[in-house]
Image (spheres, helix red, strand yellow):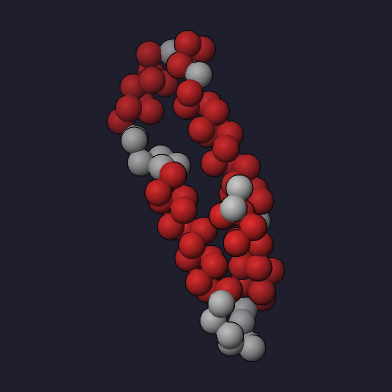
Length: 77
């Protein structure tokens, strides 16, 4: 799940930088939504996953047990 999140972020960053291939509507949409996949927000989400994985609670819910351990690796990308 974390890998897919990072994959989507990377793809959006690549999409956003190729302005020559975009229509005026696409460019206007990108300008109207500057916080879409903003790196600071993405880092905040990943940092949150890291913090949740370090709770030390033995009875963590199922998704947290599988998602959170990979967050530190994704932060290092």
